[in-house]
Image (cartoon, rainbow, N blue to C red; front, side):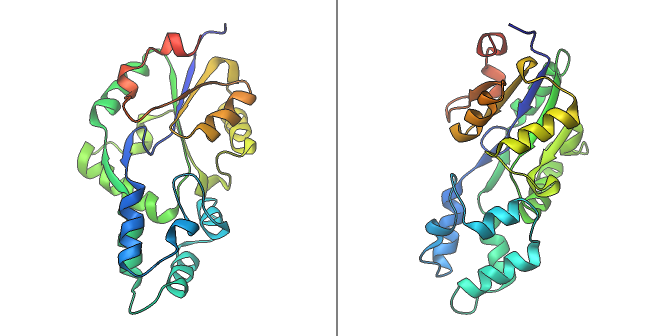
Length: 209
């Protein structure tokens, strides 16, 4: 067993509390009867996937949602509904990152989009102080910035090459099994974080053995 040198964290439901149903409910109240077919925790249609890969921007995304809606819906309505899933950051988990950083290189790997990113980066500063989110990690990788998204293998291959890390020396933590499955096939140690778990309570030596 190689020594654990690197830990890669997902963001949503790992370090940031997320409630997808709040967004689904918000869109239903706006009159979107088929939102669950458009987007969920585990899947999104091509527009949502392209949005997370930065292949379309907020202008195109908002236009798509306006066209798909009914009634007097505004861009502000859509932004508010889309961001409703973003709750609070797990403060104890972030404080634990500093302890982990004494022995490991820490990375962030998140599927996101420009609207969510702006919202959670602002929320993070409001909740956690003047140290930006990215500064808690050696490097932070956001799908919309690098044009790749989980669970595709190429996003993990990108991180391997860009960070210069070895999968067998690395642990990837995510709440979605499909994402950890891809990472595991590439040689990463993996852990699916369950709803009742917090990163500060994990036995890192055990789960990476």
